[in-house]
Length: 324
Image (cartoon, rainbow, N blue to C red; front, side, top):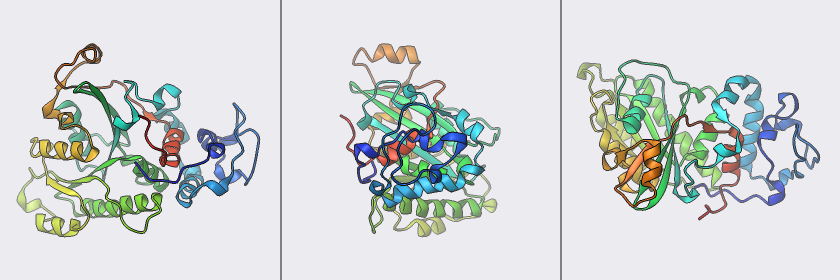
């Protein structure tokens, strides 16, 4: 997790109230050293802005500047503010929970790759995706693990939201299409953005190792339509400490290698890769957890992305060690 400086207990404010204060106001309306209520609900503790790191303030200011441009209705609909959603539904310990963030230009095959990973299926119909959130639970060697998968295509026009998604990610899958040079250039830019965001969060001048995998998708296309050569990709990614695979979600080509790399980078057991465990129903998963059986996994139904306030708290408090 990110090595962000810990916050004192008095400075930890329910951040939903920073985002959803009276009249849809934003953090800029809160003055230094203020006390009292922020919107409805319980009294918030006194907030001392002096204890927040520069990167934390950057996130809050970013939300402030972009708040008026957000579709607040759809934002609320796509996130779950309930306390139950903030923790794992399977009772997984935090140290065994990971988040995979999937980024890339529209139409490059992100959802298709994720569909292969989670369900082993492929739909040959393009449906534009703004945001998808999935949650996989695993039972491996007597332990439970959780992998959240966030496909964050719709955040391209909202830098503050994309930065938040980056900061909450543990491992990244960046996808471009081999027949689209601009999508490749976007992946290169995303890699730089991820490394910069993580470096600032860690208050470091050196670039940390950020677990990531890059996919050049649609290798099933005609060679004459290819816009980026393999040599060019490898040269551009040299020194970025990322794995590169050329794939076809349509033909299921090289998918297993990608999934195994993602599982390894996430620090999950190798059995979390799709080909190494059995997919079961929720009921069967709960029953099997009572016994030490072969590795299994379940795609949790109707998973909803945790609220933005929860993600903010995860970032601002990520300097604290994971609970055991």
